[in-house]
Image 1 (cartoon, rainbow, N blue to C red):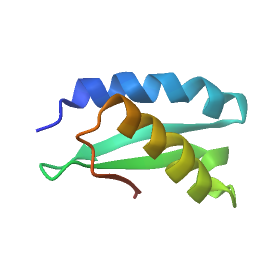
Image 2: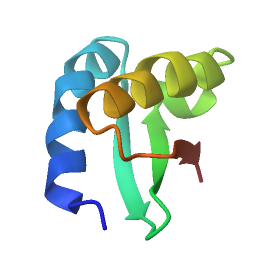
Image 3: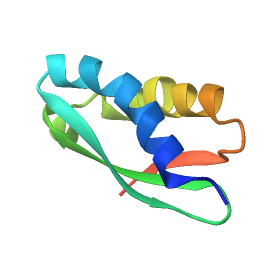
Image 4: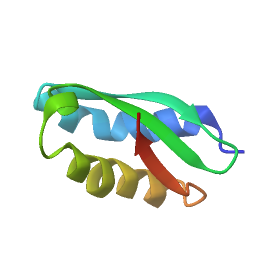
Amino acid sequence: MIDRSKVEDALNVIRPALQRDGGNVELVEVTPEGVVKVKLVGACGTCPMSILTLKRGIEATLKQRLPEIASVESV
């Protein structure tokens, strides 16, 4: 099982960029299968580019830091 605190640490690397644009990301769940579920909030929650932020930004960074992550999903 992936350590939730390690996921939070990785998200903390991404947060400053999101916060500069008026958004943020909240960790909702880490499943036993390695799926990280997050909630995009603030400007990120309504941005039309949020899927790119999720996949190319958040998921890419998390997988680079924690290769055991299977995917990142927005809930």
